[in-house]
Length: 300
Image (cartoon, rainbow, N blue to C red):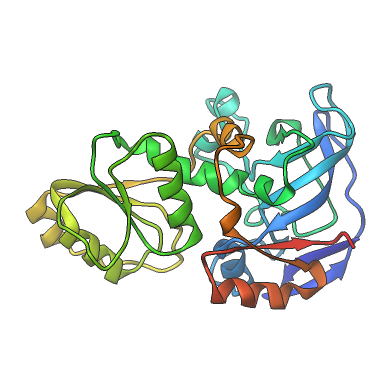
């Protein structure tokens, strides 16, 4: 089968053996559609460290072809959580997103830019067969955006989403949909009255911008993953007594509810679909426009 593999620092499409289930409570999933994330491009560019050889990708929707458990049936349409917990004590009974030794698809274990993948039964979430595949791809990004709710934001707080990418648009849309009416996207007319600022495009420049716009005792939420070190302006942070919080993932169950909600509109964030063989064109397209989700498929 075809798979987009990074090996020896080079990313290319290769033919590899089909995966097989060799453990209980695992499923074989045929990948129907995958989404490109900035993280995938950073992996391909060697800006994020990964194992010597790895299949890229972590946003996917597919069909269950085989199962070694009893919780998921053949033929079901599923989204896949990219996070796998270590299962060790005390992590055995906690959610994947709270495990401190978790592994991430496309970073620590083989990802979804391929034709078939084997994952734990606990990593797949059933979705209705009538859901649009493009919308299902947003399952993981929505779960990522929902992490903002874990930082203490209240509906009455003034919140600024800093950035212009689709994750900024998505985070803003989710908060507004859930009743956080004082949530704003970054524009040219910004005040300095924000209780919370959520950055979605980390840089030293944006850290300084957030400091200027936050209230005294405000909170800066770091949402994006960043491969480089940052120069934090400690004196300014101390002077304003700013709190810094990090947001990783929210509830995947809540993400699923939003994805299957017909009233939750994200169709304007859809971009083009590329064949897996045209991954270079797809990555380039994604780098040009961060407001649209670019998709990959191996299905003709």
